[in-house]
Image 1 (tube, rainbow, N blue to C red):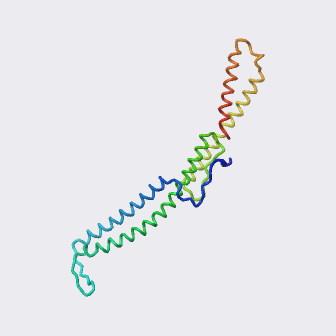
Image 2: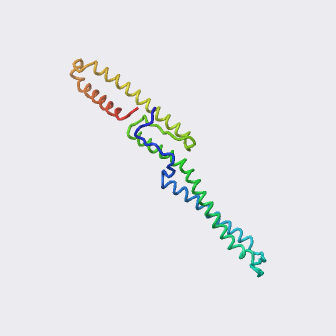
Image 3: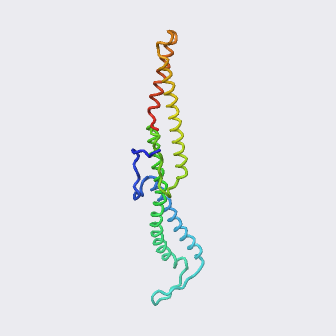
Length: 198
């Protein structure tokens, strides 16, 4: 089956496809980075609480608790590391979320085509995208439904031809109403099946 011409292609360079999903995905990972940094400060500060440090600042010797000595250094280090790791996290999660959001976008567009009756459409994913195994199953489902619709069309065509070959003139007066109802039902079925493109 061929991909529907009505379904737009995703540009490879467009990494921000589903803004809400990707923003939540990125923010959650960045929140983990910030929480990890804060946890590092708390743990180190707690472990250093009962020790003393001697430091030489310029020509002066200072004696202070280790936690007071380390706190400014820890804060500066954690801020720099958080910014660097945060930037890397945004880049990595944007790329990772693209591998999920892109396929979800393709599924959504293909579902729109199916709702419109287009069973020639299929989900086409790029190499390395997530959900590729699911897309194969999904495309197989579309193909099976398309085959069933074509089989129904073929059977309905056969029924219609046989009804037409009987002809109303050959039907008794008592059966003419039933014959007309049968022809109407066949016409209704034909109209319903015309909705599907396979």
